[in-house]
Structures are given as structure tokens and as C-alpha cells.
Amino acid sequence: MSDDLARLANGVLWPGFFGTEPPEWLLEELRDGLAGAVYFGQNVGDGLSAMSARINEANPDALIGIDEEGGNVTRLESAAGSTLPGAAQLGIVDDVDATRASGAELARRVGAIGGNVILGPVADVNTDPRNPVIGVRSFGSDEALVSRHVLAAVDGIQDGPVAACIKHFPGHGDTHLDSHHALPEIALDVEEFERVHLAPFRAAVAAGVDAVMTAHIVVPAWGTEPATLNPRVLGMLRDWGFEGVIITDALDMAAIRETVGIGPGAARALAAGADLLCIGNPTNRGEATLADQDLRDLHAARDGIIAALRDGSLPRERVEDAARRVARLAQTLRTRTARTAPVDFDGPGIVARAVTGATADAMALAVVDARRRSTLAVDSASAYVADALAGDGHRVRLDVARTSLAEQDAALDAAVAADGLTVILLDRPDADEAQRSLVERAAARDREAVVVNVGLAPQRPLALPVVDVGAASRIGAQAARDRLTGGASRRAAPPSGSAGRVD
Image (tube, rainbow, N blue to C red):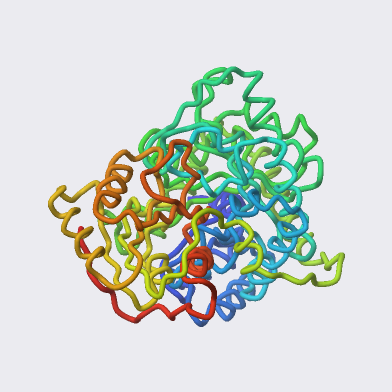
């Protein structure tokens, strides 16, 4: 392998890795020009700042990214749940000053652990209520609302030495498939796609966003290749005058890995106009993950680039241009200083304004957690939501996709028999008929029961009163609990153990 070509390729590669200490291979590659690294949940521990310092020692121009959005998607608070408002909650409140303050607080937290690139905000307009991967990660279903909050979030994040990376270009909001598992196709009329889904991206580019992340989606009107590999789609950004960094969504997602493969995908993404290749989270393969998956995936991407450089299918000039853009962003962040004074941030207050619906004055809550299982992108079914909602009351996890009606009925009977108000915790009340059916059977047992919905607000009435939260987060669950127990004075700390579980 040519050392020259390997170093050139390193300048556009952005891997994830295992552990709460930087592996030696990562430090060696950083010293040899690797663009940086991306933190995921498995990397978060008490020594995160020290790990960032070691990465910067190996490469002072390293871009250290983290997939941190607030609401449903958190890495920094993956153990206990996010204490930042989610995008849908901010869209419901529709206060751009609150969104700007949330962005600034997010950047402050990321900067405090040595990170300098936030993979957010989500700029997708969520127009399909069945969407399994965006949903409440979006500010809403209206392009004007999404645009103004994307701008406010970017402004807050980029007030200091942290880059925002809006995602997922050209728009992942009108799909009912998850690109972590499949290759979604969006066959909208082109005029509608441009008017609705491109609007927030156009606005952010015009306002000077640092980076844009691609989507692994196919828009047939623009070709048969996913946007990440499609020069026509990525070329739109340059046509709009965008001079920042185009970052790929993770190349280890099934939409790329199971179609063209990580190596060819890396080369084709660069050829299409991408600058920085996010290789992904090495834990994404689940049980198929190997002990050295992180290093294997890096080698696969780099080998694919080198092979394409050698056979001429990837011009060297294109990779050099990409590496220059990446290096320029790193240099910009090293010299950028805050434009404004710190702003007051009231996360609980913002979330309380977003949570709507039923109220009660219960002394205790008995929670049946019937949310869907977590996905690769969103750990929305984590126990911290039900724990924060239930406090020291009864709670049971119930996977309606995997359990019999008899098991579900037994869980409902136990909740009704327990002390307190029966609460059915849902996240897909319109898209999941099994969740709706559970609510109907709960209503037949207890007309005083309520639903707490952490997904998109239902468009069809449910058989019980609903508290709409807008995020599967700890701070959202606490706000819902306050609505149902008469205020924060009755909020109980989450217990250390779990109560029942039905899988």
C-alpha cells in the first residue's frame, strides 16, 4: 500500500471506535493524518475530556464529532436520558430564541468534553407520520417552521468553536423505511420535494452552516443512486454556493454496506462530491460485530479509496479538494471565538411549554411501557423514560410486537391493580395498530387511565386522554409526570432496579 495514498485517504476518513479510551490504532492513524473521530454511546465515560485531549495531541486538527441532538438522540446522556429539548418540542413551542439557546447549550456541553462537530440539527421536514427514523427528531411537518428553527439552532451551535452539521440532505422526512436497515426511495413530485424538503437546507446554506450530512435515500427523479453516492444531488449544494464540508451519513448503514459495500461506497461518495466520510458506529452490526470491527471498517473504507485512486475511477484532485475542505473547517474552529455572551437556558421550562394534553393529581403512576424497540439511530425505548415517568411506582415493559394478547392483558391487569393512575406509554399511536389496541383494552379496564405519547401527536382519536410529550427523553418524561401528579413537588427519583418486564 502506498503511504502517500493512505495518508491522502486518511484526511477524509472519520471512524467510530470501541471503548472509553482511544485505541492505539486510532492514535497512530491520527498521527498519520486521520481527519478525526466520532463519539457514540459506547465511548462516553468519565474520561471523555481526557480522551479528546489525547486525540488532539495525536492530531491537533482532529475533528471530534458526536451524534447529539437532544430529545430522542443523545450520546452524552445515553445512560440516563437527555436533559435537552428535542426538535419536535422546540417546534411545538415555536420560540426561535428558545431554540437558539438550546443550540448554544448543546454546543457548550459538546465543547466541554473536547468535541467540535455536532451531527445536528435535523433539517428534515417530517411529512410522513409513519417515518420510523426521523419523527420527533424533526422540528415539524411544515417547511417554514422547520427552516426557522434550523437557522436558530445552527446560530446557537455555531456561536463558538463548534460546527453544526445539518442532516439528512436532501431530506429524509417523507419515508417509511429506516436507511439503517434498508434503502428508502422517495418518489415525490420534484417540485414538491424542492419546495418542501430542500427549503431548510437552502436556508441553512445561505446562513453559513459549516457542514451538511447526506442521506442514504433514492429520489428517482434525480437518479437511481442514493444521495450519498449521487453527484447530481450533492452538486446541488455547490450550485447553491455551499463551500463547507459535505459529510456522509454512516457508511456502515445497511443502505450502503449491504448494497455497494463500505469500500466502494467510500470511493463513490468522494467521487460524487462528499468531503468527509463518516464510517459509523462499529456496534451497529449487533451480534455480528467483531472485536476489531472498528479497525476493519476503517480499513475497508480506506482500501476502497486507494483502489479507486489507483484505477482512475476516483481522481486524486477530488480527494485533495475534499481533504482541503476538511482541514479548512478544523482550522476555522481552532480560531473561532464566541460572538455573543452566554444566554440563559431553561430546559425544563421549554419542555414544560411543549408538553400538552391531559392533567391529573395522582399520588402515584403505574406505567405500562409499550413503546417499540430501540433502533440503531434512536435508543428511544431505553428504560430511563419509563423510570422517570413512574418514579417509585409500578412499571412494566411490554413489547406489543412480540408478546401474546394474554401476556399483554396480564400486564394491563397488574397495572390497574397497582397503586396509582394507570399510564400507557406509547411512541407510535397512529402507525402501530398494536399500540392502539392496547389502549382500547386498557380503557375497557380503567376509564381513568391515560396515555403518555412520546412520538408524533396522534391524528386519530385514542380511547383514553393523552399527554403529548414530543420526545422520548428523561426531561420529557419528568414534565409528563409533573402534569399527572400535580407538579414537581411529587417527582420521585427513578429507582435503581426495574420492576416487571414482559418481552
